[in-house]
Length: 439
Image 1: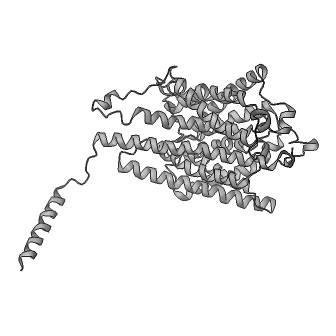
Image 2: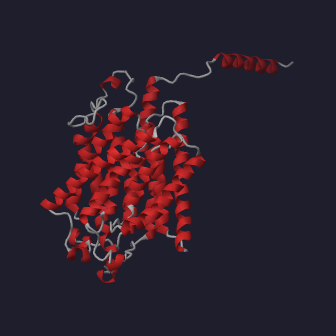
Image 3: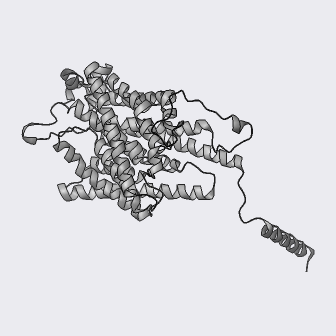
């Protein structure tokens, strides 16, 4: 045997001995877990923040040309307002000292990472990473309201409402579950917010749409419904794809950890189920519109995707991919049925937000026990009713107070001309000219 061969065999044997003596699972250091968890909050958080662009594009595509710039402004302004008030009151109201109750404490949020900086990483993540992740969720709730009430609500009353919703109302119901409040004590399950985020936004949009009233010319005598198509369907499609992408952060980040292989596996599962629920929503909405109307409706397919995403959000961690597809498909069907139902009730929802976020949010929350044995249908229903009743009453009071004090609806002339001209003094597409715009 050659010298080189003997050396190779000796090295390989020594390596085998070393490998067999290494523990089967290396222990991850506490600091590494801290870093990975903080990283997960931040990366998933900026994916959710990117959903703000998705809502802006979706809504811009589904409103008429004369209101495009206004809806863009509302989306960037509501994100900013929501972030500011969540810093002032929202986070502490939602998380500080809830302890099985109904509300946290009022106070300005501030990061406290003193223990981690001193070498104690038992807190699990950087405080600011958690605040950022929670803040982008509340901005999503406010975005839901924006699209439903488009084309006739004034800017400043809407932003005042956003401040109340993001700084007080959303944090209160969020505290009931995510803050460790009374619903959490009962065993209510809402993994990433079908109810806590989406149906809250849906209820706020519903009460606002009822109190605000429909757009001029939307409904005619004898139950006639006059279509008012959006100006830019490619833009709405882009917005839907952006929302679909951002939803991986929405649901995946709600695992709230990335410090172990089990967490990584869970996040991967959540991603797959989130994706397949959207797939199911698109396929179901596309097929159903073909069956009912003999033509496929693009806007319904877009909302079918979002409806599927909302539906899976309450429990994306427990279904199989096939079941997740089915849950999303039911959401797509509900959207197709709910949009004309609200029109028959003469509730004008410009982008279909109430159908998508409220109806599918309720469905998704009630569907959790189908795949999660730890969830109870009775408890899920109790949570849906409690959060829905509180939000409907509270937001209704706020809308009525605004209507009676400063007014919430633009004038008829402003609505006919378009809010871009009357609220902002500019046009999103000035080269087309006002002569090409219709009521």
